[in-house]
Image (cartoon, rainbow, N blue to C red; front, top):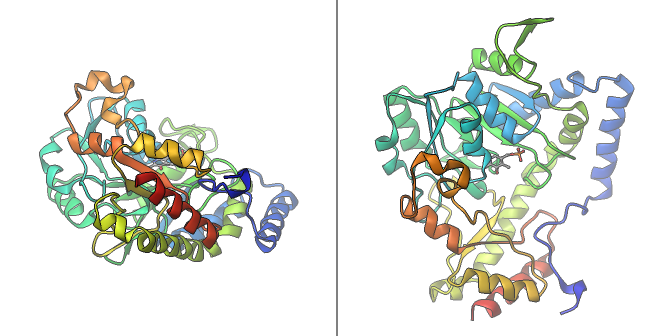
Length: 374
Ligand SMILES: *Cc1c(COP(=O)(O)O)cnc(C)c1O
C-alpha cells in the first residue's frame, strides 16, 4: 500500500476554514484586551464550560494533570492519605496522588468496560481514604451509581477523572456533574482540544470552587496574602479563546465519533461473533463518546505490526498498568495483583478515530483489521 493510503490515529491539521476563522477572531480579541493571564476569555470559557457540563462552577487550569492535582489539593490530600483509583489509566490519575505524598490504592477493573469495578471498591476504602477517583476510560463513564453510593455511605468525596469523557453521560447524568469534583483535560488530542496544554475542574460546591480558584494562583486570597500553598496552575487566555471557539462544535464532533464507532461495529460484527475480536462495550445507560475506539485481540503485537505495514496507525492505551510501574514498586503490588487490568494491557488496541475521519478511511481501517486478525 502506498503512503497515500495510510490512515493516521488522528489528524490535528483537519480544521475547516470556518473554525479557523472563529479561532483567529477569538485569539485576536485576547491580543486586543492584552489580558493574557485570566481576564475575560477565561471568565467566558469557564461559564460556558460549566454550562456544557451541567456543573455550577468550572475553574480553568493549566492541564488535565493539574486539574487532577488541584482537585486533590482542594480536598487536602496529603501524607498518610489514600486515594482509590483505577490501575488502568493515564499516569496522571495516580501520579498526582503520589506527588502529594499520598498513596494511590488501585482497584481492579471490570472486564467489559475496563473501568474501575464497583464491586471491588468497598474493600479498598479505609479510614485513611481521602478520595475515590474513578476514571471514565476511553470516553465512557465508570459505573457511577454504586461508586457514589459507597462513597456517600463511607463519607468520602469522589473526584471524577473525566479527562477522556467530555460529553459522555451515565443514565443521563453528564461526566463531570456526578462527583464532588471532576478533572478535565483539553490536551490537543482530547475530544475538546486546545492549541497546547489546558484543563478545567468542575464542581457544584461553591467553597471548593473558591479553593480551586485560589490554589491555581499560589493560594493567594488577596494580593500577596497566601492562605495556603498552591501553585501556578492557570489556564492561558489564548487557550481559553481557542476552547471558546471550539466548544459549540463539541456535540457534533462527539456524534461523529459515535457514528464512526457504530460503523466499525457493523464492519466487525461477524468477526466479533466468531470471537476473533472483542469490540468496545457500551454499558446500558452509558453514552460513550469514543475518545478512543479500543478493541481487544489475541496476538495484539503481531496484529499491530501487520496493521502498521498496511499503513494503519494504532496505539496501545495502556501497555503497563499503573500498579506495575517502577515508580510504584514500593506500594507492594506484584504481577497477578490486579489480573483484569494486566490481561487488558496485553490485548487492547486503539484504532483510528477522530471527528474529521472520512468514511472511506473507516472502511479501509476495518478491512485491514479483518485481514490482520484472519
Ligand atoms: C489526558 C489525561 C490526563 C492528563 O491530562 P493532560 O492534559 O495531558 O495533563 C489525566 N487523566 C486521564 C485519564 C487522561 O486521559
